[in-house]
Length: 600
Image (cartoon, rainbow, N blue to C red):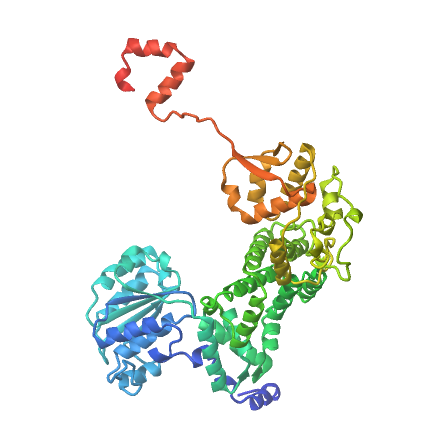
């Protein structure tokens, strides 16, 4: 009986929530009861049904796989089905016979479930072996389900071996574990092993939609997809998160409620950042990153999400790999739209930058700056599409209202200086062109204006690449200014330092030796091998850098492979002895006197 104080406090709460004491979590309420209702494990359930139909059941089974994928559930369904007195044609339990009713009421004496985590001693296994000797009272089989079997001690495993290998005909053992590698090989060899896979995001989302419909809950498809991704392949975890979201938002689950409650970063941020990267808008990227950090998200969490976003864009480039994208249909169309605006080389380079940022994140002292630098490097990929070194300039902007042609006499001739960087930034390409024939006035091209680093160009990477292709098709004008060995060495070293951020291996290969100027137009390069020529991006960037800094496009790169003297290494005992004789001749006399020729 309640006291007067308890009646005042508790009874109004019970009257308001009369069904609260009968609440059952969704993971138990919607636990599969037949093979056909098991989610995402059709290959295993079909195999088990065929074994029951053909009466080819093994004496022991091992169900292994990650948590929440249906190992114990399949074991219980199998135990119920093989003891059913009137199975259906599809090899499912009838739920009407005496054995099925006893199982549904948790009163079956033919099915024993043992938790090996708390019953892992030799005495527990001996007690189980003693029970095996008693035949079943109702049904055909006695089924022993041992969960977390990897927790058994070595002595318990050894005590279990004989019974597991030669049990009575009516005894069946189903072992379940999440850590298959911890089970001794002698146990594995006595079982049929079934590897359960992680449940896909689509299967989990469909099952959550079924549960929501059954419970009268309205849920957005994007919200269920986020819950499925958060569950990481475990259906039980997904149902637990679903119950949590119902408690948080009631009968209407929205995408915003899910990301707020589960601390998930909105995927819209990633779409915005990629759009700004393609347009080279660095200031907007930094503002969005500041907004993300101010909301309490860990920067490394953003790095991981950015990598997944870039990977999703990359798989959308090919219709064959679009199926790897585990998102809702609405979000899939958005990925496909943005993927069309992203060149594949840009995505690959951006993924490399993001992956390196993730690797070095823990060692960085200023983690926010480390992430901002990675995003700025992705923006610099726009200028790389035009074969301009990323540390030098942003993408070009086409000048407007420029006269069609200037007289040749008014065009200043660039003079070589000792500072290659100043030459590159003060010599526009347009000043280096000369008029050719009467059509020059009508075919003059607009002047590319080099913007300083850090300004927004307002031009997309796609447009920049198209301009680069059109520019490469034009006939290049003759540009033949003389340069010295000192200018060549300075320009070469400047390129090596700049290109380390793009390809450290290529920069190391060409920076190992100093180039030599021969004949005024031939640049001889000493290299260890010719593999560096396979880097087309690096060679193109190197040639463009030399053209811009030396004001000469008529030079010729001549690679020369350095010859290394062959060194003979002593491998056998006789070779080693000959090496010793060269340094100590008296050993030859000692060999002759002691007659050691046969020992070498």
